[in-house]
Length: 267
Image (cartoon, rainbow, N blue to C red; front, side):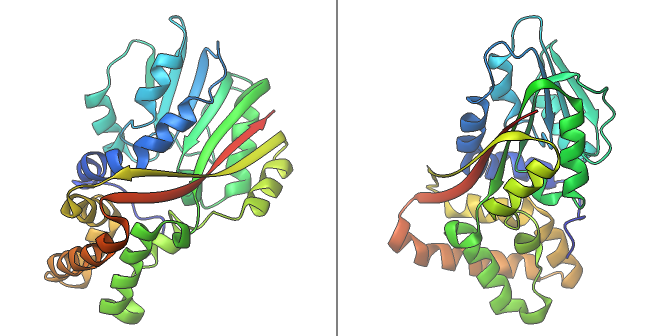
């Protein structure tokens, strides 16, 4: 199962309603807080359904502009429905081929998107190109699944049920770019300076395990993959995951412990 799998159809709605509040909200707030005061021209890459976008708008001056872009039109459609602001510009854009002029932006933000980009050095060079001198890159990537136990149990259940046919989406997609030393080298090679990478542990609450299960399965390409393997698998995997989360509740209760890398760099 390739990271090229798209977030399309009904996936964005489930992604926003189930995964958004639990996994992405805490880090959206943390990343938005790093935007330099007075930055009036912002570019957000991999904006998805707008979870980070809504926190960037209050940071934007009255005359500023936020260009929010994503590779998946269906994700953008949800974001456009949820967010209306005259300072917002929406675009479908590939991070490896940004359709923006050199030196246009004060800050480029990318919340949990860089992991999915096939050519990461090229994408980072593009981010560097569109920043003004002194501009800031602010991004997040997930730490390993070992540091995100609610995600790790998904992979474990998939392997138990499907064996060699288990999807590798989590390990080669969301939880694949956690080596801080590697990231530091990629950023420097792209021309960035003053690189700072912080591993930050945050947590949220989930009182309904079914919401988290539905988010992981229905709100990602995992559900589509299971449907292709067999019409019964989606429901069966969900049941197994609910059982697994029930066992985890003895350790975590309603907590969802998470860890991610917060990345800051300057042009």
